[in-house]
Image (tube, rainbow, N blue to C red; front, top):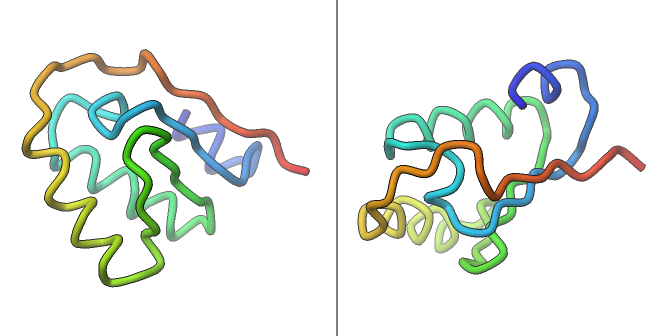
Length: 82
């Protein structure tokens, strides 16, 4: 997914919940920061927050700490450019 993002294959990354993005909070933060640097939006369907606002950033940083199951790549879907 990260390689596809670097190649510019999608503009929005949708996940069901933040815990579906990575196994650890640090990895989730790293991925989201990389996506932002590539001008790719990140959306968690069940946890709607806007990472472009201070409130959204705060919610993102707080939410993953409450979610424990390590599910890795399941539940991720990239939206094609268009």
